[in-house]
Amino acid sequence: MEGQNLRVLISAFIGLFMLAVPDTDGAAAILKRSTWSPENFSAGVTYMKKYGWMPPPDPEASELITEMEMRRSIAHMQRFFRLPVTGQMDDKTMKLMQRPRCGVPDVDVDQNGFRSRRYSINQNLKWGKTDLTYSFENYTPDMHPTQIRTSIENALKVWSDVTPLRFNEISRDGIADIEIMFAPREHGDGFTFDGRGGTLAHAFFPGEGIGGDAHFDDDEMFLYNTDVNGIDLFTVAAHELGHSMGLGHSENPAALMAPFYQGWNPDFRLDYDDIVGIQMLYGSNPGPRPPPREPEKPDVYATEPPPPPPPTTTQQPGDAVCSIKFDAISTIRGELFLFKGDQMWRTTTDGTPYPGYPTDIDLFWDNVADGITAVFERQNGLIVFVKGNEYWEFNGLTPTHARPKPMTDFGLPSSISIDAALPYNTEGKIYFFFETQVWKYDEYSRIIDEGYPKRIKKVWDIGNDLAAAFRFKEKTYFVKSKRYWKLNDTSSQIEPDYPRYFAVDWLGCPPPETDEYDTETDTETHNHGSRTLTSTLLILIPAAVLCLRSAVL
Image (cartoon, rainbow, N blue to C red):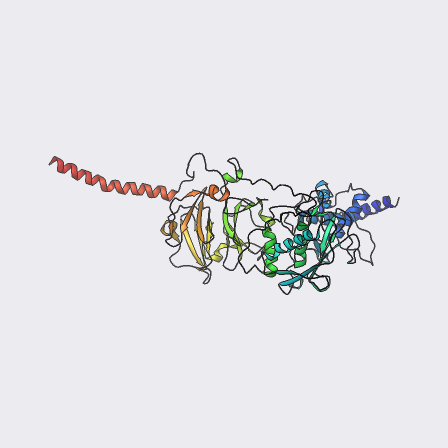
């Protein structure tokens, strides 16, 4: 009876507000009549409070949680995790809420509404030093201590590989910056674990006392380099120690700092989203960039053999990526990015696109228009996306302006929409391409260089109407349709044996069955050839007439 009365009270409360609440941000969908059971409603409230999606109860207020508040909170969570925004605890949302995950809240909720933790760029939530110590309070009985220590060492190495951070283990008798502990249920920090499943671990942002510490739920079955019948400790620890460094949760599902357990991956690589976040706090590794981490092989104490690594995939003739004509290609933070529509790819030079791609551009850079025509990284590290005669600018993943700005900022005419952009950051120059012309912009004087624009063919012997131009490993490349040219920067001449097929050399695609050239016609090249033939005929015909006259005479 009490539960029935509560549902009646909630329905009455919503009815009072139905006409008063404006239909903004999906309010109409949020206020639809509920079909939740009391059990689902209670479980949902508990989950939403626990992970920061609803504010904690006010001790001076009633404990009543209205369905309207609940739906608004669910709608925001769905938006954060890229789910369909229904405001309902639908099947996709319920499945998400049942996944094992980290215990750190996803967002803060205050009087101003939701505030994402995404990256804790607040400098008060980072270590004021780069040499950090850690120690083990205890070990889980699930694994041999050697396996545990190796898992934690590898998890810390994930972050030290891309930052100046360095980690040293000390005895538990000392005072460590980061203390590692395994414990079930209530364990003294006020954040009780929930048994097997659900919350796997939690960690605290940098600070004094408990700050930086990482706690693992000992009711879980932690394993070494496998998650068959359990949870891989390295995967969980790498995530939790990201919190210990000051990172919050990311809404990018491919990121290590996404809140849900992603499973053991023998080919693990830190995602670009995570790299940007940690380097915002500590900067990049001043030494040479380390190779990707090779997973440790289990030793004799391993409780389960690791599954075999997934087979190496190569592109096949029917793969869609092999036929794509990309809108833009750019080097960002030393890695190659390819863009088409609202999707993007990352690739290595050995013809292997990174797993998990393509992905939506707005998982990294919000509000960038679909169908961008150029992307480039400026000398100051800002990343620029161009579409039409406007551009969006980002500091890492954070926009520098609320709205796009005009390309006239770079001294370009307002009437053009550039095809490609090529930054030479060592010289402080950016080349902008439009049809048959190229402009050269100076980052220091902030004006177009004298004598520009020029015809592209006056500068480089390449086609017009480029799709992309980029620098990679100190080399310059131009792309048009499915082919690309490589420039010799010393002679400013195209290297021999070019153009070549971009998909074959950069994406690992097989060569086309026929050596067809691009279907697009280079108008200027065609016209130039016609003009050359006409000029030749104008020279040869009079010469032939003279020869005939001489023969007759």
